[in-house]
View 1 (spheres, rainbow, N blue to C red):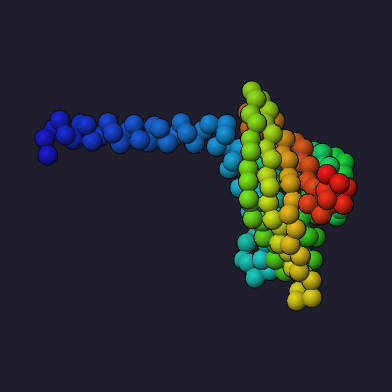
View 2 (tube, helix red, strand yellow; view 1 turned 90 degrees about the vertical axis):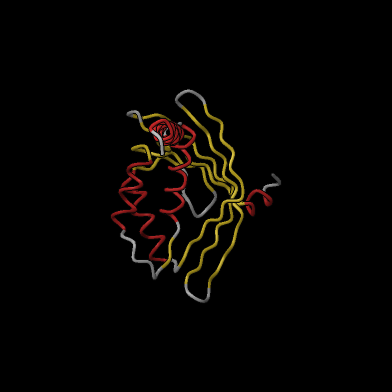
Length: 168
């Protein structure tokens, strides 16, 4: 291989890595990674060996200090701090044998320092052999830039069952 071919190969590799780095640092990609982390935190399998502390740390990274909620039952409305959110997540995981979230659609509206993401998803959950549920949910996440990081500041979640009962 000639020095010219080596130089062209090296430049191509640098361009590829540079493009990947730029893409990875776009606001859209950062927000998408935070959404994936949020879904992974809420999904649960009783036989899983993952650590609660890891889940709590991820929530601290992706959520604002307080998050406002507008949700269908059983999720309460209002502003909630991270410590309360982690306690409720732990309670959810002690009451269920598994939770799975299947995303069916995602739409993002990005402004300078804010973004809103709409997730259409199916949430499946079970508590032992006796109770299993599967519901369609619409989840709207409002992001803000806080300390140079995209953080979730507001969550609105509505089950399709509640929407249809309300005539929406």
